[in-house]
Length: 352
Length: 237
Image 1 (tube, one colour):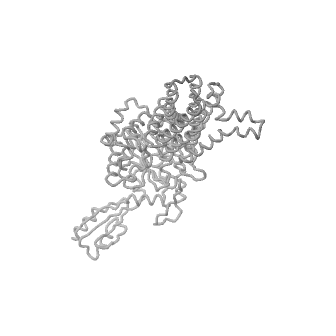
Image 2 (cartoon, one colour; image 1 turned 135 degrees about the horizontal axis):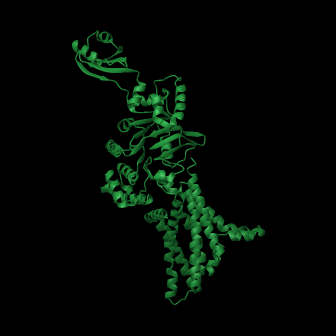
Image 3 (cartoon, one colour; image 1 turned 180 degrees about the horizontal axis):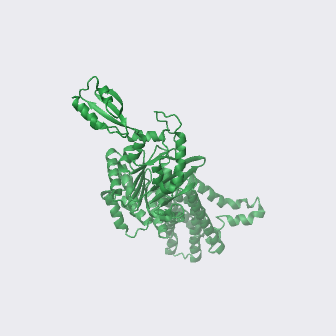
C-alpha cells in the first residue's frame, strides 16, 4: 500500500533523511519512532507529496507521489504536525471547504460521517478559534477522513493533549485501523503509543532507519537471556546458592527486600523449577514474572550506538528495499564497533 | 475550475471576517468620496475623468494591503501544508487567491458607482464612453497590481514583508518613466512600461488593445511566476 525506496532528502548540506526504505501492507498500522529531528516529519511530507525527495521514490496505493502526485494525494488523509487550521472558520465550514477542494460527490454525508467518526457533531457550528486543543485535533482528523482514504498519515497525533484526550485519540486511531481496510502511518516520540497501536515499528535516528520490526521481534533481538523477577516473602540465607544450582540458571542477583533477578539462557524456561523450589523451601512466592525490555530501553539501545545489524527478517519484510536495507545493515554493523555506553548520547537536533 | 472557485470563495469569506478588508474599503470609499465632492464643487463637470486620475493613486496603497495575507498567512499558519497535500494544483491556488482579491476590489468599485448615479440624478449627463472605459481601466490596472501582490505574498510567510515588497515593485513601475528626462533615448520604452501612463487613455474614454494587453500580461506574468515560486517552495528549506 505504501512503499518507500531509498528516500533521501537534503536541505542544503544538511541531510534530513537518508536512504529510507520500507513497505507497509494494506491494513497495517506502522509507527515512526524517533527523537525530535530524526526525520519523521520529513519522511511523512515526502509521502504526502508536500516535499519532493532529493533521491529515491515512494508510492501510495501504486501511485508515485512525485509523478502522479494528484492521484497519490487523493488516496491519503494527512494530519500534519500541530494541526494547522483556519481559526476564523467554523468546524462545518472548514470541513465543507476541504470536501469541496477534494471534489467529493456527496459532501454533506461525507462531512457527517467524518464528524461522527471523531465525535465532533456537537461542535459543528463553532468557530475553530474557540476550540480546545483536543477538539482541534479532532477537526484535523475529520479533515483527514473526509474522503475515506485508504491511507492515513498522522504526524504526532497526540502531541500537546491531556492524558484523557490522548487515550481518546488513541482509541480513535485504533478504531480507524480496526477494520483492516485502512493503512496507517503515525509518528510519535511517545513510546507506549507505538507499543499500543502499531503492528510494526520503524525506529528513526538522525535521518536513518535504526530498526524496522514488530515490537516482539525488536525485544527478542536485544535480549540474549531470559530474566526473571522473583519476589520472596521469607528468603533463607542460602536462597541465592540454591537458585543458582538449578539447571539453566546463569546468574542470580539479590536486589534486597526479598527481590531477586535470575538470568537463564534463552532456550531454557526455568520458571517451573524456580517456582517448585521456592514453594518447597517455604520461601513464600509473592511475585514471579519475566522481565521484558521496556520500550524506552529498546529505543535507547537502537538510537545510541548500540545498533544491531539488520537481520534477514528485516530485509524480507522490506521486499524491494532489499539492497538498501543490506547497505543500512552494513553501516549499522560498522557502528557496532563503537563502545557501547549505558548512557544515552544526546541526540543533536539538526534544526529545520 | 471548480477548485479555483472554491479557493476564491473561502478567501473572500476570510476577507469579510478580518478587519483589514473593512478598513481598506472604508478608507478607499472615504477618499474617493472626498475627491469626488471636491472635484464636483470646484469644476462643475459631469465627468469622472479627473476623479479616476486621482483614484488610481490610492490603488498604490490599497492593493498591497489586500493581497499581503493571501499566501503569506497560509505559510505562517502552516495551513498551506494541508492545502497543498489535497489534490489541488499549484496554479489553482494562486489563481483562486488572486480572484478573491480582485473580487473584493470589484465590490469596492461597485460602491463608487454611486458617484455617476448622483451626477445623473441631479441633472448631469455624464458621457457613458469615458465612464465605461474608466471603470474597465481601473479594474485592469488593479488586477495587474493585485497580481503583483499575490506574487509577493507567495514569497514570504510575513505579511508585512509581502506588503512592503509589493508596494516597492508597484512604486517602481509607477515611477519608471521618470527616468525619461535622464535617458531620452529610452523615454518611449519607459513610458510604455509605466503603470500610470497606461491609464491615461482609459480615463479619456479610449480603450486601446495594447493597453489592455499590457495590464493582462502583467496579470499573467505575475501569476505565472507566483505559481513557480509556490512550486519552488518544495525545493527550498
